[in-house]
Amino acid sequence: MNIPITDVSPFHSGDTIPVNPEITCSNCQACCCRLEVILLTDTGVPDYLIDEDEWGGEVMRRLDDGWCAAVDRETLMCTIYDRRPQLCRDYEMGSPECEDERLENGLDQ
Image (cartoon, rainbow, N blue to C red; front, side, top):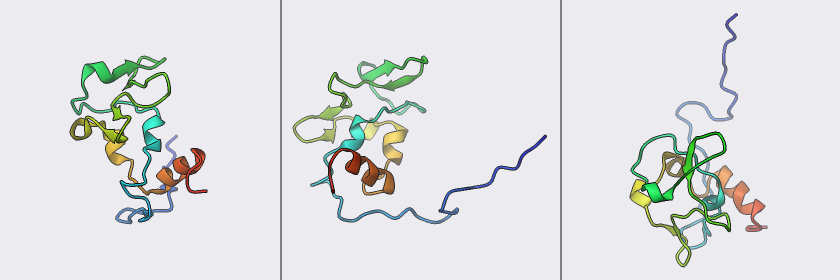
């Protein structure tokens, strides 16, 4: 039996996701850099920044405090920005997902 798949997203092809312009590089605080990042494509992430998850998939290595190992702790900027994983490229600063993560981390309350 074939079941048709329908798009349940509130955005349709060609629509853009609203972004909060108040979230900028100067106040970002890199909350997303605490999330697990699965490596779906080869973007050139150095081997020393790659770990294996419990299912055998490749993920960005995180340090004991949960932060991505590629984040500079002083500037909160990615040290491999040009080679960052596709998931990081797709996670847009100020997007609804970003705002949710900021709220979960005690920002923007």
